[in-house]
Length: 201
Image 1 (spheres, rainbow, N blue to C red):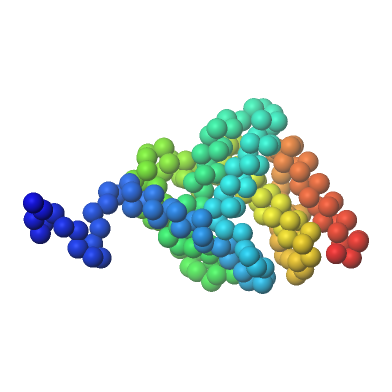
Image 2: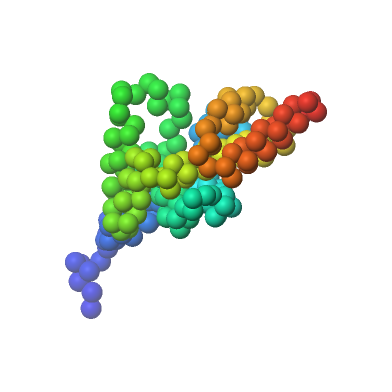
């Protein structure tokens, strides 16, 4: 017979830190990318959708990079790079610019500890590696992060979305010089955006 102590009362949970962290990360599947909301795009890409896109770019471009990269390491970096947004949401540049210097990075580090710490030391280490941006794998993953924005931009432009010039400028200004396959895709994306413009689309 169950006692009162065995009964989980409404509003109280007994989940492990691991389960709570995994449940929190599920939010990324529904949280939208704020920049697209600000431009009136409906429906918007989700944070999880963006992460998946970055992983796809890592798999597409990483094996062609010379000298060779650790592509599996890059995948881990891509998977965790936006994990703090499960707690913080996708803070747009316009908001981040209004925060005190270092505030966004500090908040992301604390959020990463909360949502990735219970997963594994590896997950936390990969987030920190990406945040530092020192290793070649971290730099490459950061480039893929920006290229995915360009890829999503092109997708929206092909559906007739306008008023996205700021995102196009970000793509054009991206420095891909360290990774030739990434630079090749950047050129192709920019050329296709230019073709749409010339076509009046």
